[in-house]
Amino acid sequence: MSVEKVVRAEGANVKLRLKLDITQKVGEGRLKTKYEVSQYDLSAGYVLPESLKNLVPRDVPEFVDTERYVQRLMRALYHFKQCALIGPSGTGKTHVVYLVAKIAGLPLWEINCSLQTSVYDLFGRFVGLGKENWVDGLIVSWCRHGGILYLDEANMMKQDVATRLNPLLDTRGHLVLAEKDNEVIPRHKYGYVIISMNPYSVEFAGTKPLNVAFRRRLSVWINFDYLSVGSNISEREIDLVCERTKVSRELSESIVRAAAELRRRYKSGDLPYAPSVGDLINWATLIADGLPPLVAAEETIVGVASDDAEVQNSIRTTLQLIFSKKK
Ligand SMILES: Nc1ncnc2c1ncn2[C@@H]1O[C@H](COP(=O)(O)OP(=O)(O)OP(=O)(O)O)[C@@H](O)[C@H]1O
Ligand SMILES: [Mg+2]
Image (tube, rainbow, N blue to C red):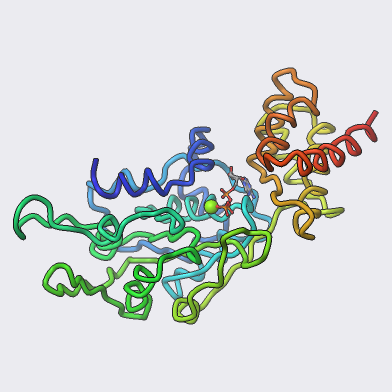
């Protein structure tokens, strides 16, 4: 397996990757119009190397974009070449990054910074005996060939990697390969960087504030949130769940209401997890297959949230309240 495949396999957002199987081929031109991003051409003049074609995302599912995240991200990349995305788990950060890479037709180099990806995988190494065969790591490949470098969970990045990335994030940045006779690699003209992370807070076990040097190199920060939270219910989220799963609209509305309440509780620090749209689609899929809503929730919404019996019970109470109201 090539280095980038290894790293992508390790760092892939598995949840999203599975969802990507749902084929929804829509032309890039149509997407540019739909998300109103025609003026932000990120790849005009870029020649995509044949060998990198498989790094351009293909079948990205539709994204309900009430906050114009796609446009805001593409605008930031167009003007500043890099951007940060902040928001709780499941709010669509990774989904938007895939969509932007698809619309722009750029290769996506994805690194999950919380995984123990080695410095060799990221920067490169000599293989075999002696110093003849050097293999580029993922970051070096991005720097040479361009595309979008996506650093997921960037606040979990190890200090040694962050330190080496700092000069790259300056305008006209470059990378110095100390391990390869200090070769200097300029950042590719079409080399974009997106970092994403969960907000720093007590609920996100293990999160920490982003490295300061890193923080000041990013000009645009986009905050992500759920489509529906508390009493604020998004009609488009209801539509999305029933369109994808064929449950009735009425049922879809109850599902979204339940999720909105769980998200409200999660945001107030009362629950450790809140369901994403993806989780709702899984839940509704089992209902469409014939399971009663609360039974289907056991295997999806309740199970995914926590192993803790107390937390699970507290989620059940919210669900029962909403579904019993309906009867
Ligand atoms: N607005 C949306 N429209 C359609 N699908 C969405 C939307 N928001 C989230 N999803 C779906 O919800 C799931 C979670 O989204 P995603 O993985 O992009 O979240 P994330 O913000 O990257 O979360 P994490 O911080 O855990 O990495 C995916 O299946 C994604 O397709
Ligand atoms: Mg993600």
